[in-house]
Image: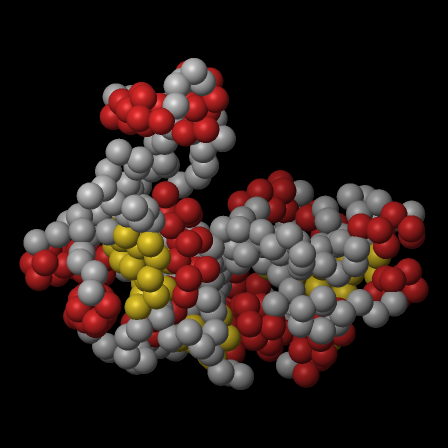
Length: 396
């Protein structure tokens, strides 16, 4: 009998991970115990994904607010610092801002508007239109912002981030000044020591500021990119991808985890005889149509993955074949014709009309998004995801 099920995504429960735990054994054992419990079998090219959180936790990759402060002070001078383009997040940025402010005498916080980089809104586009403001050129101070827009609380969190971030800076012992602008060079009217906090546009922002004569330009990826006083760090991403752990500590994005995914792959082969693909994933790459929030606040979806997950899908659009190439066929004839097209497809379908409308994204971004939606970010207790049948097609 032919298979009637395609892709399946399962959340796998595992023990609560602590520093020093053997993730290779835990991941493999947890998946195989789930397979035995639920009565499914492992197959070649199944994908096992681990959330970045448990990888960083097993590594003990943590740092304190004081560690952030020490690095910021050493790299940006400890006087007036321009902190530009942060995202609006209690979990992602607020605790980093505490550390940054502790390493400065004054923080000039420049917020992009009407929303941050990942879509968290300060004000709506309708409010911008009604106020006659051009966000590409107009610079607002806090008083003008309040005059035009009043108090604006985040739709989902209920937080007024302007007040919230201002209070964090002051409570850390620094003077706070908040402005609203979207041109990086604007901050140079206030200070020439800049910490740019954007994620995906950081290289461009740094380039613009350096060309405009900034004295010091750092990104979040330059802070804690090496250990400070024995702290954790991330050589490639620094503070990017970090999350709040406690009121005084952050969990950094995992470091050096390519060896981990390859070791897990090898252990699966040893224990099952199956070739399993393995990846570490963080945020998925998708956008919420209600809140307009683009989920990807991590620097990448997957910081490490096995070689079989490199590339993009190479798929034909079944409805295109059915409506065009084989529009005169139906039933068994149509099924056979489409199956033959799939079996004979080329390895690279770029430019082929029959592939239009398929998803032109990296495999790790697609699978990571599926895993993120499966595991959630709360109390599901499934930080390991097993995806089966992802590489199947209509002929399998």
